[in-house]
Image (tube, rainbow, N blue to C red; front, top):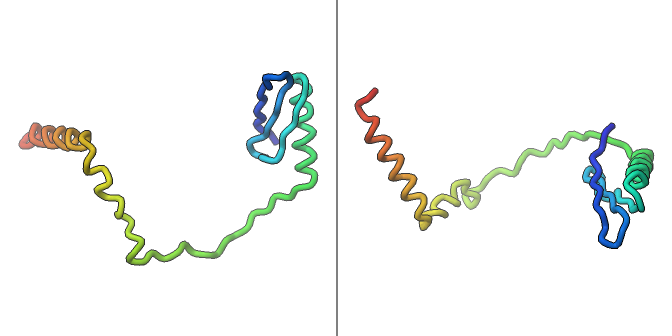
Length: 101
């Protein structure tokens, strides 16, 4: 299995390594080669104590109520001047293509 590791050079010297897929997996080393080696060892250590399990979650999403209106954000950009220019351009294009079909 391949893991992406992030090597960060520390200002005071040395390298800090983190593994994005395993947030608790970090190591520090003096050299790049040591950092990679220690990262492999740390990943192996975590995986040796881990189990990957997939579970089904039978719960359905919460039903929407009248307070949960999905379009409540409509009009949020009503004061944005760029919208008016966009709508004007759409209307101009519509006028230019009328009767050409």
